[in-house]
Image 1 (tube, helix red, strand yellow):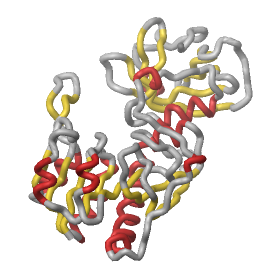
Image 2 (tube, rainbow, N blue to C red; image 1 turned 90 degrees about the horizontal axis):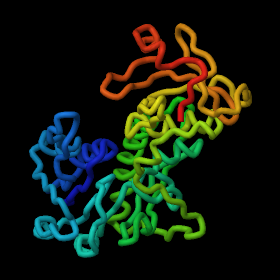
Image 3 (cartoon, rainbow, N blue to C red; image 1 turned 180 degrees about the vertical axis):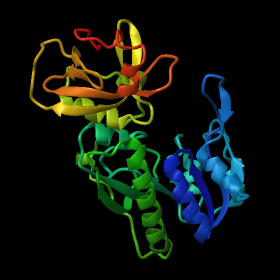
Image 4 (cartoon, one colour; image 1 turned 120 degrees about the horizontal axis):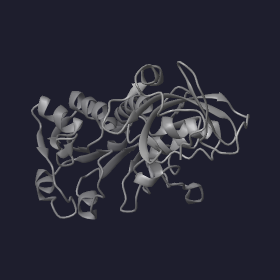
Length: 311
């Protein structure tokens, strides 16, 4: 079967690898190389690197809505999409014999959009999964072929969850694809009454709000790690927060939520609403991320001191 694969994020890599081993992948479509780091060096997507590793043609349109002719010329049997990052025009959706099939990292209709894993963890979900669906013009609205559920563990962040769901997505797609193409599996419409959304994360959503409960603060940090990360303001400066831990879920020792309650040799405790969290790994602007132990062992003790407020 002739396939065009469209994907960009790390989630898509195992899915592409699975297809390369079982099908004929004619082309990989991925986002253009983007500036990365302080020096703004152009960085290719992990999907592009995997395609080049296998000698597959790579197409990187800036706007897929107007740059799609190379895809149509291949006349693929099916187009597989996983975490691509652009809305795909109707002409592409209609071209393949078996249409466009999307591998989405949620149990649709829950968490339609570009950040389903982030929002599932942030919202304290205990389960999530992968959906194989036929694509439609409206975002993540197409009928569903198959789903597979997994648990979200307390230690999971979006990085570990992405790794697990990418494998689940690969296996479910490879299990499902033969039944889609032979006509034995037909898609079923989504339940419109159960729709929720997980839109791409905005900068203001990265701000960590200590007016929330300790568990909600921890979930927010886990849901945004390793990217885009959360942050708080301290004395007018940004502190990126990589990891926190819930120490207590009910105590309120200060009505100033975000107040640093105590700093020891190895710990920094902060008031949430309610509950207490400890900062575990942080980063100052222009510095490398550090464990709280390493941070406090250096010349940073005056930065995190009792009575200061993380806002």
